Length: 108
Image (cartoon, rainbow, N blue to C red; front, side, top):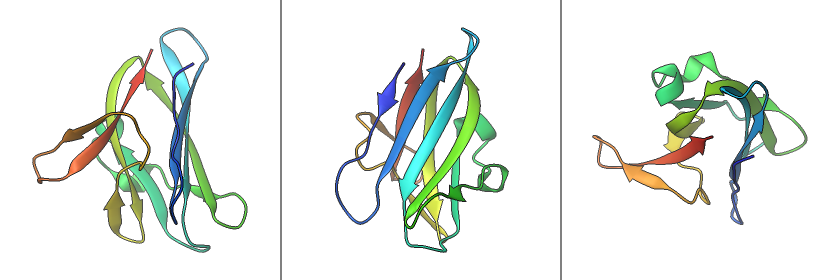
């Protein structure tokens, strides 16, 4: 299982990949945001379309979404109330063509 977890701050995020079939894995994204926020996850796995993975509020300030992904490296970001943000404690980030960073997870 590969995991990237977020640390302190007002907003937190994390990703957990759980082995389901060997080649595809269910990845659970978590992020902390204000109650009632519009929260999405997007990345290279969905052609950066945030509308395809709206995150559900689970508790007062926590949001989550599960996505089945193939093995490999995937870049991603959270979209919180229209503002793109990286996973603050993701151990791997890469520069993108917009001059900002994308979080990177390796699904093994």
